[in-house]
Length: 216
Image 1 (cartoon, rainbow, N blue to C red):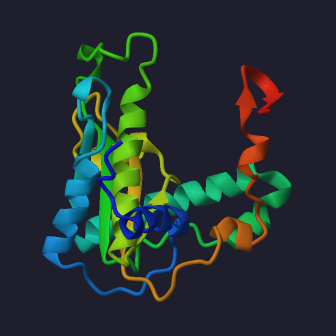
Image 2 (cartoon, one colour):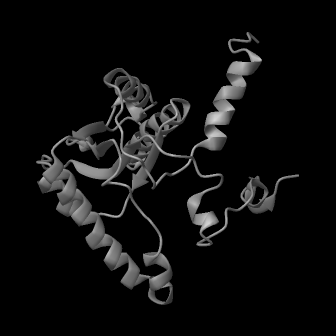
């Protein structure tokens, strides 16, 4: 086996994975154009089913458009709180987005015309969404390596966001990404630190041969 990466290079990859956090607290600032381009190139190098590259990235530069997106997120935040019942107040205390304070705001969407792509999707049509998730993860890890925070916001109604961004019929927004400098990265996932939930160890999620059979 050819050792393409040095020990330090491999360690850097694993460090970026381990220290990646879903960030909500940003401190303004800006991202240099060449850095943003590197991040988007990293996203674009993600694998995709049938090489269909279903991701589309929309950079939000208009302040009024950013405010409108934040308003949609706030609407969904309130509806999510009501749906959570007894955990409503606990949820409302959480910071769930950094749209107002992040340096860059991106919306990621699935392209239109996806039904024409059958390779790898005949029985698993959601592989287009899985491909977009890979692109987002690439961007996330690259951002961490650049010392930038990123947060994935999923509290929005795609049917409301689509028209706001002039998405064509068949396209669908799947992620709002907050990106930019942060004062510090969370030492652990924020939802765990806030007591909302606790991450489970890999050993509880790893089976052998059959569902639920612990790995020997």
